[in-house]
Length: 165
Image 1 (cartoon, rainbow, N blue to C red):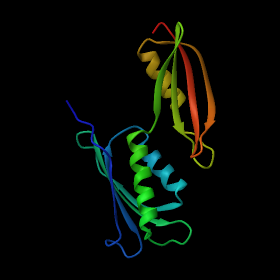
Image 2 (tube, rainbow, N blue to C red; image 1 turned 90 degrees about the vertical axis):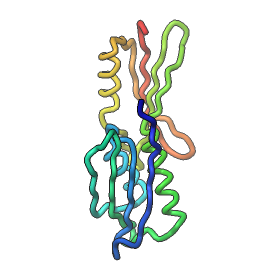
Image 3 (cartoon, rainbow, N blue to C red; image 1 turned 30 degrees about the vertical axis):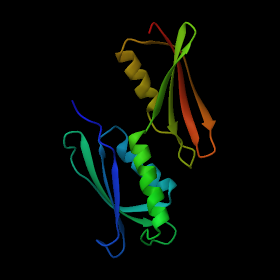
């Protein structure tokens, strides 16, 4: 039995004269690189160099040398560091939100993922969810993709009405 290891993100400004080092340790998962790059982009962080080590027992170690996009400087502000670290941890812990809702005789599967500030949604979610349901032998009666906005962000929500499950 494996235990879920919470993601860890540390900031180091002493190793490089021009870059901030982000050291990330987390569970290896599909779309991990995409999620980290999306968060960096949405946070106006430029990744100059990165190293992903091989997955060991399902965990990844990632080193990213980053700079602020607007001035090319290190990330010195402690509040900005804290915000970046907490955003990375949250998104690595919950890259997608999934819920199953009873709708009378039917069940509805809702899968939500955050939309980038540029308006793009996470690639292949619709395909991956459909493929997983097919592998489980679950029939899809209807499917749709909608956008939902909250105060903090916009979400892409994949709704599927399921049959025989």
